Amino acid sequence: AAAALAVLRLSTAAEASPIRKSPPARVRNLIGGEFVESQSEESIDVINPATQEVVSRVPLTTKEEFKAAVDAAKGAFPQWRNTPVTTRQRVMFKLQELIRRDMDKLALNITTEQGKTLKDAQGDVFRGLEVVEHACGMATLQMGEYVTNVSHGIDTYSIREPLGVCAGICPFNFPAMIPLWMFPMAVTCGNTFILKPSEKDPGASMMLAELALEAGLPNGVLNIVHGTNDTVNNICDDDDIKAISFVGSNTAGMHIYARAAAKGKRVQSNMGAKNHAVVLPDASVDATLNCLVAAGFGAAGQRCMALSTTVFVGDSKPWEDELVERAKSLKVSAGVEPGTDLGPVISKQAKDRICRLIQSGIESGARVVLDGRNIGVPGYEDGNFVGPTILADVTSDMECYKEEIFGPVLLLMKAESLDEAIKVVNSNKYGNGASIFTTSGVSARRFQSEIEAGQVGINVPIPVPLPFFSFTGSKASFAGDLNFYGKAGVQFYTQIKTVTQHWKDSSSSQGVSLAMPTSQ
Ligand code: NAD
Image 1 (tube, rainbow, N blue to C red):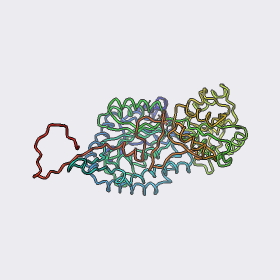
Image 2: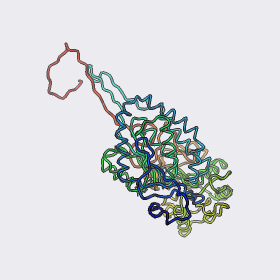
Image 3: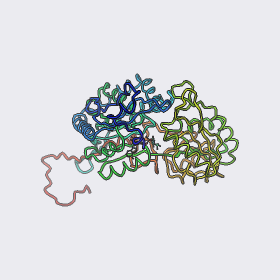
Image 4: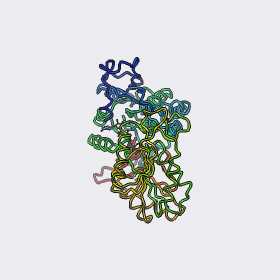
C-alpha cells in the first residue's frame, strides 16, 4: 500500500513538484562492493514522520540489478567461505569498533527516517552491535562434533559449513538492529548476503554497509537491493539464494515463508505480536507501573516486543488510575527534541490504522481512559503523532485485541485468577512475549511453565534475549524452526556435513563383506 501511494515516476517528477529545486538523493544499491545508482524509473519517498519532509528516495530495483547482486554474492562465495574464520571474525571486531565510532550518526539517521527518540535510536544500534560482538566468537560457535572409534578404527565428525548466498528482508521499526541480526551472523559463518532494507527507512542499512566495507568485508560479500514486493518475490524465487531471514508483518512473513519454501529454501520468519503483561495483586507497585508505561509506550509502541495488553488479576482500579497519571506525563514530540519520550508513528497510514482500531475498541464497549488521538505537537503540526492511549474493559473478542495495533495503545483486561489470566494469554494467536509481575516465586514459576509464549519475562516487561541466547518468538509470531542469533542462528546459516573416516593399516585386510556394516 505504501508503494502504491508513494511511487513517483522519475520522468514526471519535475512537472509533479516544480518547487523542489534539487530532488532528494536516490538511495543506491550495493552490488559487488560498489554503491550504484539504480536504472529503475520508479522510486518511493522516504519521509521524516515528524515533519513529512522527503529525506531520500528508494529505487524499485530492476530484475537485472537484482540478478547482478545475486551474481556478485555468488561470485564472492568460494573465496569468502575459504577465508579463515579468524579473519572473518576480525572483520567483525573492526565493524563493532566502527559502529561505536558512528553511533551518533546512525542514531540521528534512524530518528530522521523512523521517528523514534535519539536515545531509543542509540538503543536500536546498540542491540544490533551486540550481535556483531557475538559474531566475533564464530570460531567457537561454529565448532563441530567428534566421536572417536565409533567402530574399530573408525571416527565420525561433523562440521558446519556455510550455505552460499543468503538474504535478509527487514521491517521499518528497527532500521539498525534487525539488519544487524542478519548479515553479521550470516557472513561470519562464511556465507555471502543480499540485504533488502525496509523501503521506509533504508538509511541505517546503507551506513552499516559502508562501515562493513571499511572494516574489510570483501566486495560482493554483502550486497543491498531496494524495493518492495517484486524485489522480495525475486529473492524468494531465485535458485541461487539458499536461505531467507525475514522480520515483519504476518501477511508478508507467511507469503515469503510459503513462496521460498516451495523453492526448497530455509526461512526464519519473525512476525507480529500481541504481548501481554499479567499483573498479580502482590506485584511491587511503583516498579510495575514504570515497566508497563515504558514497555507500552516506548518507541510509540512500534516494537514487536512492545507491551500491548495488561491483564490485572483482582481489583484493577487503583492500577488503572495511576497508570493513566504516568502515561499522561509522557512528552510526545519529534525524536530530535530533548526530553521527548515518544516520537511519531511511521506513516499517515499507520496513524489512521491505529486510530481506527482505537475507535473500533470504543464502539465495541471498551472504555477510553486516556485518548491520544487528537494530540497537537507544537512545531510539528504535520507529524504522525498519536499520544499514549489506554483502553480499559477490553475483552478478547474485540478487534482492537485480536489485531496487532503497533502504536502507543495499551489495552487493559481483567481476570479473577492467575489461571484465568494464563488462559487469556494462551488463547491469543501470537506468542512473541509475555510477562508476569509478582513478588511470588510460586506464581512466577507456574506462569513460566504454563504460558504459551516464546519469550517470558518475570518482572521484566520486554524480555528480548541477548545474542548468546536466541530471539525465540513462537505460535503466529514465528515460522521456521531455527531462530535468530545465538546457537540457533548459527545453525540457520550453516549446514551439517558428517564425515566418517577409517585409516586402515595395510596389514589388516578383512576381505569383502556385502552385509550392512555394524560394529557389534
Ligand atoms: P512489513 O511486513 O510491512 O514489511 C517488512 C518487509 O516485507 C519490508 O521489507 C517490505 O518491503 C516487505 N513486504 C511487505 N509486504 C510485502 C508483501 N505483501 N510481499 C512481499 N514483501 C512484502 O512490516 P513492517 O510494517 O515494516 O514492520 C512491522 C511488523 O514487523 C509488525 O508486525 C511487527 O510486529 C513485526 N516485527 C516483528 C519482529 C519480531 O522479531 N517478531 C521484530 C520487528 C518487527
